[in-house]
Length: 209
Ligand SMILES: C[S@@+](CC[C@H](N)C(=O)[O-])C[C@H]1O[C@@H](n2cnc3c(N)ncnc32)[C@H](O)[C@@H]1O
Image (cartoon, rainbow, N blue to C red; front, side, top):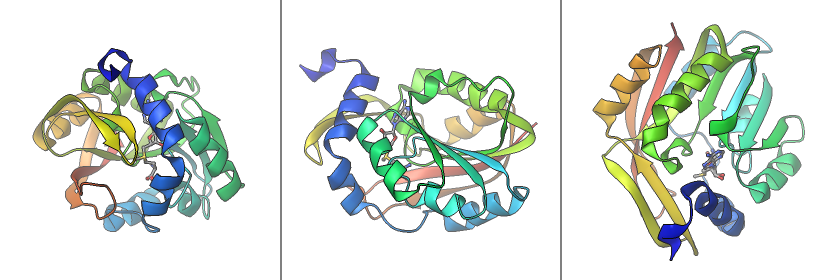
């Protein structure tokens, strides 16, 4: 039955439903901490940063907000409600990141943790190009992408709700990021300890060419 639901609807409804359960499992520090610190270190003081697929805003938007002007975007209203409470100093928008338009290229940095993997992979190149367009010249991305090859796939009971994932493997992702106008500065495969079942993801720090 869930196969007939559009992926973005399934993901939005799923994260609305599992918001508390996901929050209780989420670690309190950013994974790939070396790349996260490098990302922060490359941004200018007071930088404008987009957190795409921000969830409840912790730990990523909360940590970025200590030094930067943060805009968080998430497709789930329940996640955005929590983010507004937990990180009141940031701005949060409930929107599908594939539809974002910031025509003035306002961002010095865009980061996205564990969210792009919920978008059909055929849409990833267009999403990366849109990130590129939203960045100032020389801006940076810190992206969490898939490590293995996974065409669209639904788990009917993830933390109590159906959930959808879709991504390419690490090698394809690195090539795609470069083809979308970025220079890859660093990347690493990271196994998390909070998703069920545990999974490995590709983290990539890249600069807009
Ligand atoms: C695994 S959670 C990660 C949340 C947060 N980034 C973190 O590190 O905990 C994935 C988040 O991405 C959001 N998401 C998935 N697809 C999205 C889309 N197309 N646009 C915006 N947000 C999306 C979900 O609603 C969810 O909050």
